[in-house]
Amino acid sequence: MLQPKRGGHIYLRPLAHPLLGSALAAGLVAAAAHLAVRRRALRIALQTVAATVAAAATLLGLLSSVFLSFEESSDEVVAESANFRLVSYRSPGFGSGGILLKLQNREGIGSREGSESLACFIEESSGAGPAWLFGRADFVGSDEIVLSAKDGTTWRVHFDTETLTSVNPVDRCTDAPDLAAD
Image 1 (cartoon, helix red, strand yellow):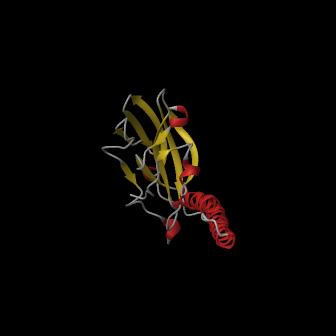
Image 2: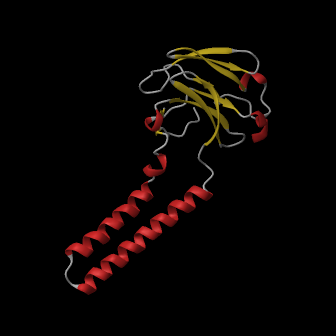
Image 3: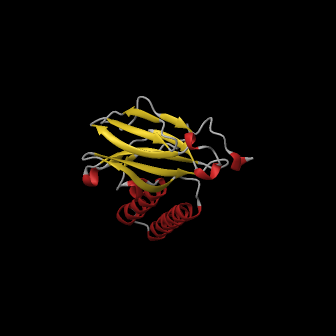
């Protein structure tokens, strides 16, 4: 199934970028050099290298977030319950790409998103028929969602409330006809 591995805490994602960690580590090296190195020339050299690494990591992180469009992008909340949200993402791919549906819990700043999609449908631009396109979703229980394609076909998807993953995900991307790719 078309699904980049993403998930974890929703509101803390910007802090999880690896280049931010590199920039912070370089800052700690500069602070340690200031406190521990007695020779002035060596201390300034270490701080200069650390500042250069921090600036490069920060710049690369900003450039990658601006220019890399191969990552899925959030579209909209398609269903909500008291404890969960189902969010659709547009995921670029070869041809038309897909609509990924991922589950999020609603726990304030501690809100998390499942790392795997509950469902994948092909984009409307593919020219595929309504059997391959996402229609709607509704929560019907504390651990179950009903998904519908545009042609009315429905699936009951059970999910684990702790891991936010499905036992039986729906895949309408893999074998979907994609006229846009031809």
